[in-house]
Length: 230
Image 1 (tube, rainbow, N blue to C red):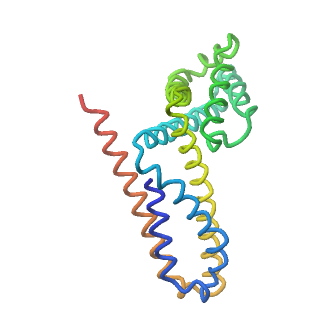
Image 2 (tube, rainbow, N blue to C red; image 1 turned 60 degrees about the vertical axis):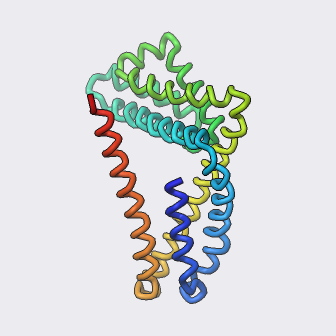
Image 3 (cartoon, one colour; image 1 turned 90 degrees about the vertical axis):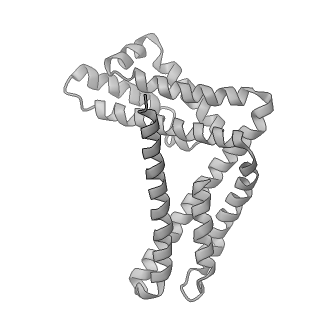
């Protein structure tokens, strides 16, 4: 929802500019605007559903834990103990066998993939590797988030909410790609034609992104303080 608000603000800034003169009309109309419109249409009904927000938060937490586990195993591949390094190598290879960018998959597909990875990790041989690299705490957190999402999918009354959340995730990914492309083109044109015509737009975009990052940072600080309260 926060990301959508940032994109909404940036879209408003873009509409105030002479995009034809700035040579941004094409990328706006063919990339950014269609992605924004689709994202807006997907997000709008979700504002009414606290349950959907819970699903999206669970998915965000799960993605964070999955990436943390993967990064941890990659780091352990460099461990001075060759047994630990080999164990980490075997576990990371299991993850890689399920393809790239698993955290970007549709919600239910990602749930299924992670469930299979965790089942592979729990096999007798691989469980020994998990113990050797001390990865169980991370695996247990990932499993908890994944199981919570699976429960949502298995509840017939919540299937539509899960599908809506999956569509929102896909629309967000497409919006991010369109925004990144827009920024690349603005930077390229500013480099080729001079930055002056683009200064206001660049300033406004940077301001929106900086404010969003600050908000996230403050939210995480507040969360950390709450977590450490007795």
